[in-house]
Length: 121
Image (cartoon, rainbow, N blue to C red; front, side):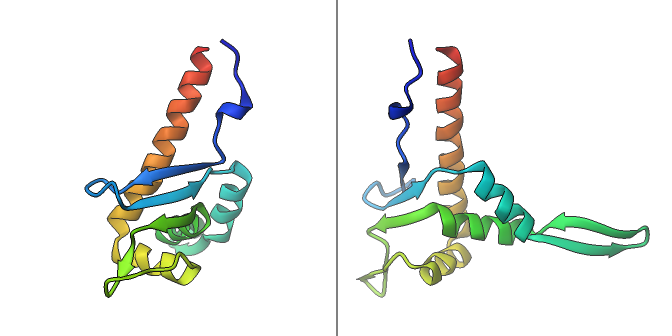
């Protein structure tokens, strides 16, 4: 079986784990963009041995979420639809971090499964 680039969708829809009417449309990860986000979130920590570079993992994940999520359905605030803006994505990240982590992990799982399938064929 051939590998066809057209089989890979540009965006992936992830359903809320308990409510399939709530969905998040996410764009695929791009290694160059992830590297750029990684570098933007580097911090220098002073230690007894000098300085060490580290990454602010929480900020990196928040920025990844803002970049990855392009829209959502049935997300509300005060029973009104919540627009998918950068500000609202950051608010959702802070208030529902476990849900955001679930969506990002599902994206990674789907991409990994696709890669595994491609390697087998």
